[in-house]
Each structure stands twice: as C-alpha cells, then as structure tokens.
Image (cartoon, rainbow, N blue to C red; front, side, top):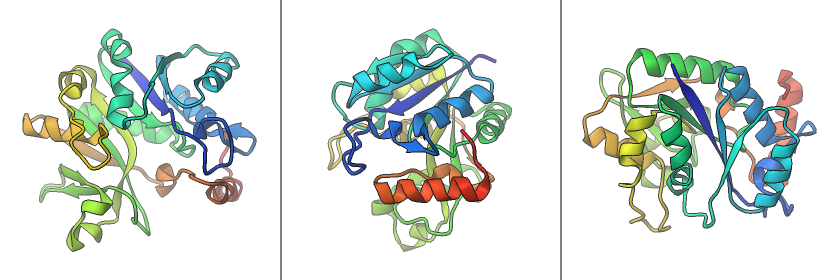
Length: 249
C-alpha cells in the first residue's frame, strides 16, 4: 500500500538558545530531525515532506545534506499543527494511501513503532490511528480516552481534562496515521476557535469521529517515543537517555 510521511519541523528554538529551528537541535551530534527521518526511512517510507517555518533556510540547508530526496513546504505563520499539515495538501493529494504525521523534534520515535502502528492502522481499516504511549507522569500530554471495547473515543488535552481523565496515563505521542483521502476530506474543516486561535491536528480526528469513521490508538512499546525537548536541560536529558539505552540515529 502506498504510504508517505509529513514531518512537522517549523518550531522555533528560542528556549534552546539557538537561532535555528528546534528540530535541528542535536542529540548525540545529530539533529533531532535527522533521527526522525532515519526512523521513517527504516520503516520503509521514501516519500517524505518536511513542513518548515521559523528559520526555513536552515531546513533547506539541512535537506541538501541528506543522501535521499525530501520535499519541503513553508508554513509562513505558525498557526498550529493542523495549519502546518494544510501546507502539505498538494503533497498529500499526490500521495494517496496512508500518511504518517510526526513531530520533527521527537528523536526516539523509532522505525519499529512506525511499522507496527501502520500494520495496526491498515489491518483495522482505520481512518485515523493515534500513536500513543503509557508514561509514568502524563502531565502536559493529551490523554487517550478509550471506550469500553478499547476503541479510541477522544484525545483530551491536559488543560481540558477532568479528574478522571487526568488520571489516564496513556498519552498522545503527537504521531498519527491517516487514510490520506479521509484526512484531506476534513482538513479544511478544522477551525481555529480556541484561545490560541490555532488549527489543531487532533481536531481532524474529532471531525472523522463525527462522520462515524473508524478510529484507533496504537500503544508504542516504549514511552520514549513521546519525548522531546523544549530547552537545553531537556535536550541534555535526551542525550543521557540515548547513551543509557544505546539509541543511535
């Protein structure tokens, strides 16, 4: 089955104290974005689109160093993950089948998780599949809410979670598989009617749910798949984890 990947790499590295996009911050000498791209390639995906934003010229320079082709699209305004994916509509239209959407600053999203979640996504015939993980401390993450049969019912952001939902330790990794045509059918319906006035990709899942499309959540074996870094201290922690567990780019 035809599959492709969209990697979100438009974040600013202000708290990293760097003038480059955050996904270019390095773990063990390699940009986090390179870790993600290598995992995507090892999972068997060759058609890749990088959504760039802040410091787009640095992403262009980085792309030129790769020994495999990638497309890039520009998100002129940072208006959320849904808006970022909207910039890749032409790429998605040209690559029907299934698309995995990943954050470019989550270096431990491994190829096994990408492959296994794709197999789950296709075997269940889902319109969308969230890649989740179970963590010790879910603070700050969107919670995965399942129905009595274990099917995905909702993704509830931390700030919107009631006491019962906040106790859930299965969280959204920020990685998703979509049936490409199903995604395109709802992408322009995502609204920015929230406090941040941004377009959020999880809203695409809400829209598919309203259309009674089948949804699922695949739980990764390792909680490390959700890890990212927003500052130098967290970046240092990622390096320590990589060394301790023998992770390699």
